Image (cartoon, rainbow, N blue to C red; front, side, top):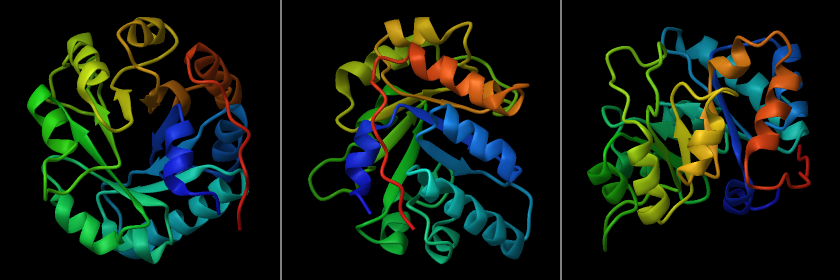
Length: 219
């Protein structure tokens, strides 16, 4: 398998979704999705693990990275490429201890202070990448106020790890997010609500400044 951190560095389009059909996921990957995160908030461990193993197989056949939300233990059990945690989830250091040095650990950030803390100081845990947002209000994060483009500009100037702008981003506003300094975005509804997820992914991917890289599929 090509080094996960090299593939992360080359990534631009990140899909976050609940359990979906193989057909949906395959279409999104064909359209240019580089990373897929499985986020299931209400489900048994067995159900999440079964979905994670299915997602992993589909992602790896297409050379995409696969991430599990919140649960480092299930990320390891599913042989995922990493785990993503929020500010109120498993502490970053604990997630790293569980998944090991080879897997990726991502962290959600919502303020300049959290962006700074995520990239670490001497002796502290360091995220491999961060999510920055929500840039715009989104029903996928009820009660979480939008941070606006200011935090994207801050991350573009200060983040020492790859960052993905997230939150209400779609074809109607992706250009503004890119103009604020984002080279990578994470989306949910822009693809899960799309009639044609392959075309929707391709449209977003073309609007991002990072060129599409040839992906190497793995078993």
